Image (cartoon, rainbow over the protein chains, first blue to last red):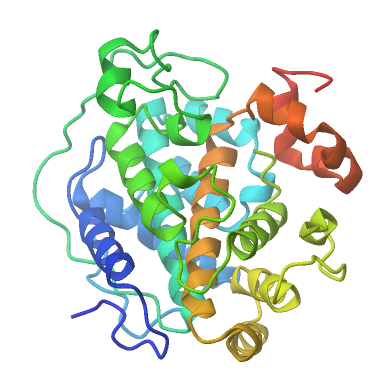
Length: 239
Length: 111
């Protein structure tokens, strides 16, 4: 049964399925955070949204959060969740000097970005935010790709081929990828989850250069890019 | 078909896109602080473009809500080829004034 069965608008099965999967995965141990910690990040992002009135708190929010995030993590989460337009290098530097590792930071960015995505969708179709799942036991993998280095971004990234070597072969299918794909590559699991959402919510990336490609029935590419461009302008996303 | 990209920064301008006015209003409202405005924008979008436009537009707004946080949160620069192709219209519609532009211009000044 669809995660969006309460919606008056029909939601494509693949989209509902990926959202259900991604919500569930938030409760699983990640690369640097436990399931509890990852859910705490998602919950804090939502709380920031309630406080800023850009999200409405649902009656059923899900399992109670039983860990407290350190203040440095809460600051990153809250700022990025509700004001990405003025999130700057000083905010990143404060996070690092406050004790977050680059790896933890990237996982936080990935989680905040994805829960924001799921929540904007729910709000857009007029349903309450989906309840967060219960945490799953287990420890994070702490699997850092050795190939990740400081390039032009604030955070280390796996370089494109050939510099990225085996890691680029594994994670980029041996093809050069734009920075929006590589941005989270220090935590490959987050990068893959981001791309997974991209391919279903936006369009399959192999079609991105086709101006007439239609991924959403009855919705033209021009309409897609108008919404995309406007949201990004409001978030002052120069990229 | 000619599209007016200025509509991205000034939604009062005619974009040239079918249902553009309703799509822009929905985009603003779905990430904005007024739920009543969003509910009205959603209804207007469905009325103008059909019910299927609502989950479609919501999915796109959701996608770029994600991408903008990743880009601004990781400080990634835009690609030099894209900078070359967009130089004129970036200046024309003020994209270079976005606060995150610094993440690009510190690596590629004058582009």
